[in-house]
Image (cartoon, rainbow, N blue to C red; front, side):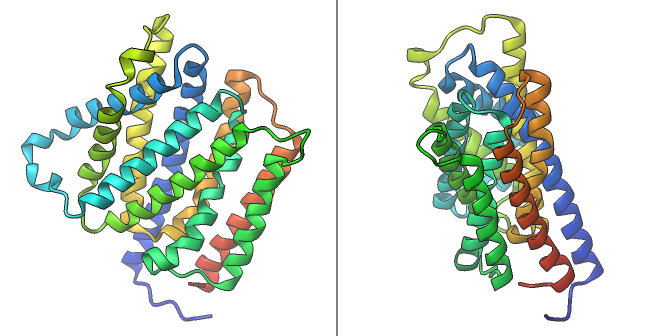
Length: 297
């Protein structure tokens, strides 16, 4: 145990970072619910394209990058590109998995990302986790296994897509932290959306279709708006607090995803999903306890 040396300003910044992370998780839940609904009638590639293109358009309109081009100069362009690819990979894997899994299942499996972050934050960011955090992370990953149900009669291959999305999302979070003190939040918001739009636009005419009604079109717009605003909150959160502190608050998504799944799709989570999610949340809360009470770094 060590004595805390944090100033009141630093503590307040960490709390603001936590609040922003919670808002981001709510927005991402809205994004996933809209994407799952839309993907029943639209190709997954087009849904991903809409998510990033709409986000890019909104960001350009709101931020007006031409008014201050200096803040969009990339100081670490290779990491910016890697970050954008991580985010695109996470979205593609997740949107495909949403076709086959409940929102509660994809959310629970996505919670593997914080455990990867806890493990990699040390060598990548210099934010080393203590042994008790490691134990909590291992227990949390056991909860993910409970959700996945790896037995031959119960395992759903789509769960691997969700796990791949979690790996990509962990990479996105770590690279966000790496860039948070050298790149502007505006640039970090626009560049991933621009990269995804450039990658996905050429093949779009081969698979794209016209939305069948106004509701589908509106929900496709919603995916972009919720995704863009959610990632803005995530970027600013990482400027205010360490990745290992923010990681457990991704679990607040477990409150919203089953609710959205039930209200929109009449999905009732299985007992495995509920038990696994409970294990994951408990491990995350213990990690938070070590950070806030014992300052276990």
